[in-house]
Image (cartoon, rainbow, N blue to C red; front, top):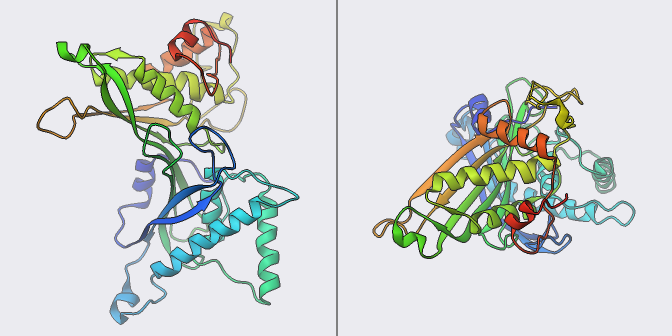
Length: 373
């Protein structure tokens, strides 16, 4: 199985693109993921964007001014992506073995549909999907139809799925999968997954000026979860924790608010979903048993700790500028920094607690009341 990397690490591996083919915001409708209230199986609009970086320049295509084997026609690519979505919908809606239509599953399936390369962790009933594709091809034609991009020398394949109506407070939820290829190797050598909560608009008290302490102002919050390894759709619970943590806060600086959000995400979203087996509090002080990205006491597989990026903007703060913005990027691996390690140590002392979704009332009151998981 190829390693799950951050976008920067994957770019370092694949290099800067010299030739690109891209399609932006293909529109379709699917009962994908969950809606803004966390309800599954609700049809909603989705926008798909894809980008392909090739290993070699457009030599034959540019010299002959034709769609030669050194490239791929963007119209053909668009039709193939939409066909993959339709195939995914039909297979997931099977009466015998229905499959939840998760965002990650669709990204993985479109990659498989276009390239024929399936090296990532399988999603439920994937064997049925593969068999369904094979039987359909056999029934339609006597010869096997090769995937569109199977023989294309790619350096990078990217697919981003945007759900513009899946957020109560923001402009949408997106998941971007990027698959890096190396010369002479079959299948992707590494990949990245990035979940984004886009432009959450949350009123809160923040600022150092006296007037800013008198009333709430709108803050735009962007959340980017890099190295995102979840197969399930947990973005509604993530948005709930981020929104409540922001609106209930009263910081003077955006920097302090950003770190506050990161610690809340680690403690109440990432750790409750971690497979790590916590020792008893009597095991303190804390030795090397906290999970790192390279080892685990309960599994031979590495932990893929997400890297969290928080972007905060205050549109009303500066009169003659759009908005001052502060960004913070922090790894949730407890071996990488003191902030993450402190959160993990707190959880070891106090226990793992999962915030209910939906949570009625204030998050800080639930935390102070020692709400159960």
